[in-house]
Image (cartoon, rainbow over all chains, first blue to last red; front, side):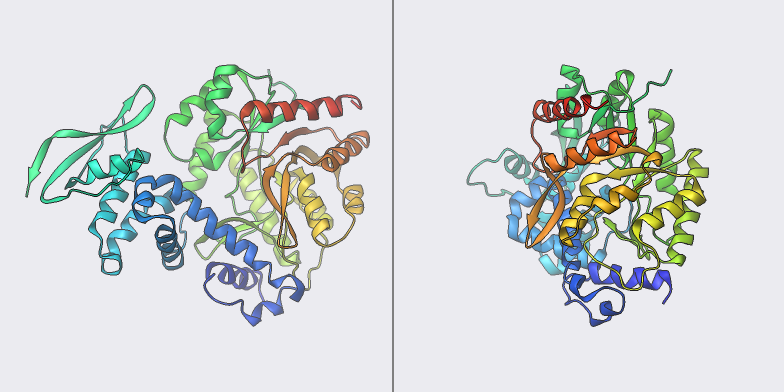
Length: 182
Length: 272
């Protein structure tokens, strides 16, 4: 077995953490320590989960911990991490949500994810803006500020433009004045 | 003029401590910076530049994939080199491990099966990186939770062969060694007595946890007194390096961490 094949077996056994550990690991790993692959599986999952938890505060608050965890698990299993920069993995999560609409069927998820991304990574110097359905930003703000008994008041017939700006070193989002009627 | 960091105890720089460090200007003589935390733009760069004006730093990477076989990611290396030029760290270190395969990144430190093919590949990659950055890397021993079959070398033999072929330096993680040996019910004494301490430029100290019958390198607790005793023993045997506390989880306030750092400084001051 080549070195590359050797690494491939270990890599696949970690990445496919929803599957039982394959017998073929016995060829390369001492039987006593095969079960410890689960440590690397946990590291992979919780590394991804913690990263996304930090970046998608509004989305996580909307979904609740268990549903958020379920989506992270699905994202990690289906997409894998394709960049040495873990922030890239985080950024593509919102695209994953967009592409899996048929699975979750919740338009709000993608909008909340985009607002979370704007808040975390939006380019302040360029006054970056995004458009979301009217009402989503107010709901997102409530989630971020941990307001009790929130329910989204969405008007699907119009959109609002949200801008990222710097307030004495703190990143903030606010509504721009214009509203786009569809 | 570059200031010597030998026998100085530093700390790992963590974002949550940044403001406290800049506002309070602690005595911490140097910081280890995780290079991967600075791949993206953001206000943390301004803060690091400010810190860098008064305090030396070293770069520590978790993504060079030294033991892997995938081609190096050119964008990643280019960004890394740009950071190296801007912040002028005293050295760059990464782990004796692989972290990606077939384009899938684990963002973890996975053990290398210590075979001749692995040795050849790892040395070639270290040499490439050293040429790319124009310096000698420091390579760190990792915690391993699995044991491969049919290995040709022990870890010490593997490390010595790498040093001989590439001229790289070493980052000795004392806590990783102890965890590896504890998990196997063995005494780490032989490992430390055979370790090529003359090649060590940096030492990591950290505190782990015990989970499901396994000691885990979680960086979530204070440094164990046993690890500090090992450090002292190695210093009496001639170790001359920079030391630091790695803390990533269950983070205390910066003042608490700095206090722990000062205690370790005092503990080793008697034997210097």
